Length: 387
Image 1 (cartoon, rainbow, N blue to C red):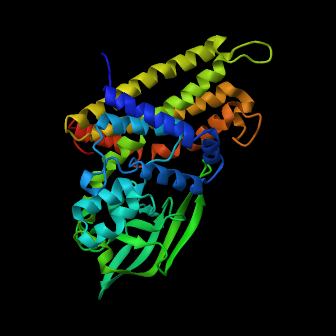
Image 2 (image 1 turned 180 degrees about the vertical axis):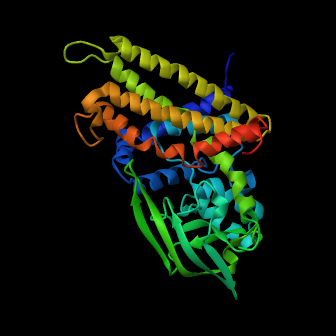
Image 3 (image 1 turned 90 degrees about the vertical axis):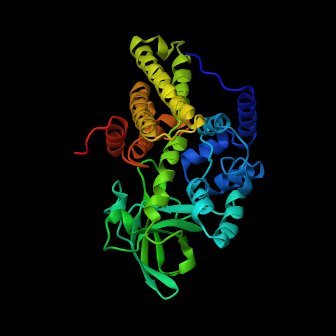
């Protein structure tokens, strides 16, 4: 089977790669590997916004571009290959939801600054006892006159320490089935009563636990209808998985390992000449082609006007678990030096394998655990009954 992109898509890919070469060089990527490169990421996103690329998937009436699915896909792949930041919660979830369900005041207030890369949102979904089963969330929002009073805890609210707002899911009616009592809110993170506390991950990245203590939020922060928040949030998740779990991030790590394996050491030997190294990398090369075909299937469905659902879950599982296997095997192949972190001068491949080893666990449960993804494949893909 032959896969070919249009001439227009290929030309756009080259334009994007040239831009990335100028604006997101190795030193920017290394800064991201070594810690929180927030200022660099925000400045880069503003450059994307200046070109209209930050919101290229938005409808034209809201500042989007008439880009094909092929062009958007290749843009995602090019950015992921070099670890460049792209769209945020504001662009992928908040903006599209406001376009469809927000008030005119909300659209005027939030859409332009989001499109300019000036406003960022944290994702306020997960709680201590509500992760995979998001519909069981318990943070309460009780109507009191012209305000909602909110109490509870959100956990793993990434970017809460560096965002202006939070896209918050809260329970507004505890008396109905759990999916029907959730509402969505746009909340300023500087509102009194909100406390953001850091949680440091194995991969070295910061996420947060956010405490809500009698936080008063005006009623105009409610998005759409009260108690309809679950339905507003659910549709965006499949597209989040498509955009996050692309192929090039895995390809970049495998390419780095291949370059290391083909290089000669001080004695003129190449690791790839060892059968165990060659066999291991060849196996990952085959897996990568499988992943690429699965990813192309999602792209083909979008081009036909279809909505990938369990197909997106397949790519999510395959890509995250392949990355974990690849990082594990890379650490083994590099030996003791594979444990050196990115800031160590003698770290092979700039410490990327060590960093990948620590980071590869989280994506297997982020954006929906792989166990739940398998249930989606079973029930929606194969029509199997729920247990």
